[in-house]
Image 1: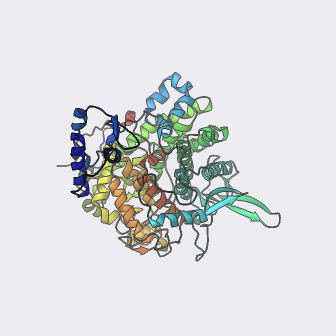
Image 2: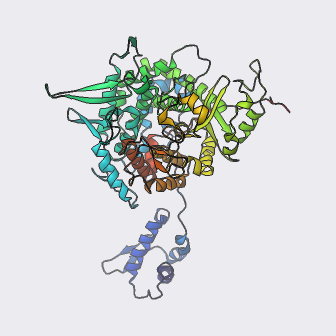
Image 3: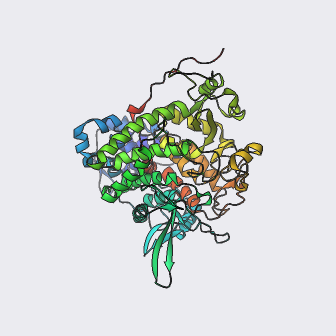
Length: 609
């Protein structure tokens, strides 16, 4: 009875009712169980009680045990769960992958281990519904979610009766140009949305169709492209005379400016791993055609040449920023995608036969690339101060200013932009050149791939919080910051009218980046940043009919040439919402840090006093 009195007192406190005496003990126990279950306490407390049909208690633990319960603790907010995760293949060190013969021979078993956390996940086999998925955690879905799913499904492309992708935009008010095609990079957020909703078929079809396109002969004018090059996009052509459908691919020969789709192959590998991770089905990745496709893509990147750095040398317009924007050289977006693709390839490649040599090359390159990026592309307040005081014309391997960067070339804006706590990977590093601009995609991928150390990942999040107005403003997220203007704009962009200051790729705000920001926030344990950004986007995104990008320093205006009903803006929002509601989805696109890749940072003093 002491238990009943104690619990009645507890009920009065949470309900505000003083008259709660005429309640049967069976009802009390039922309410008690519901409170425990809702508060998460049932997992740590086992009450052995049996109640008969009349509501009377038949047996229970000792009353002393029951009376010891402190009901006031149930009013406290539940503590975050400390989940012990299995050590999956994502967390295996690169040294282990390249070292032990037993590991190399047991590739199938080890690769299946990558799906252990998927099998243990409560979302396995769950399909949220063909149309609008319900929140798995009981959160109220925003009204935009249903509209977004409808719009996403309208963008689906079919080839001979099978869904194979989503077109870039469903905007009939503008000339189509190439917006009626399925872009490899654009389809990634759509693919993730379908995977999270339990619809993997469209993703599988896309991966297989683009793989087939890779094997086509690729020529631009009289020059034949590398065998491993993936298309930038493709479209379905219907011949009404023969009533026959064919695929038409673009490897850059039709693109504006004839830009090379360097990132397409990396996105393909990343998506293949996401599909395998989500479905738990490695049969697609195990296909000889897929194994060969991965090797061909990476052979383009790992071949020997005149390079003195482990980074990839690229032309301008080689990635999401597909116009002349001064990203030639070693752009952060390509390096981060390259790093992530290498790590994903380790998880899906068979580590025997033809894959063995490739795996060894990947492991060596990852060690060198992680050191290079973490050492020379990273910028925080201390490093900025060091560069500000650099000596120049240093010779020999002991030089600190290895790239002979002239301190006077530091832009004025970076001194005010850099917070006391925070940092980021800068846009480009090459001889006598550092591009100090912030690029969102590269930094988010750096976090997800664990190219950034945990400390660096935290610093990137600190920077975003500290510079919210500059990087998020009224619509997430700035593709780069700051914008280039005036004489610099004329020189760098060639007077590009589409890339005027604070527009398009020159400081424009791109809603698609919301999914990358959300994934990075969840991985670093900062979901509140993502939640805030999503709320900002929800205020306008649907009302403005899902624009491609926004203009202005704060992202206040719909872009002057922005397409409406842009598919990856829609999909990016959906993926961000689903990841925030079910953080386990982040496992599709996030990799744990490999402890073996931590560089030993040693710097000698090399500045003037």
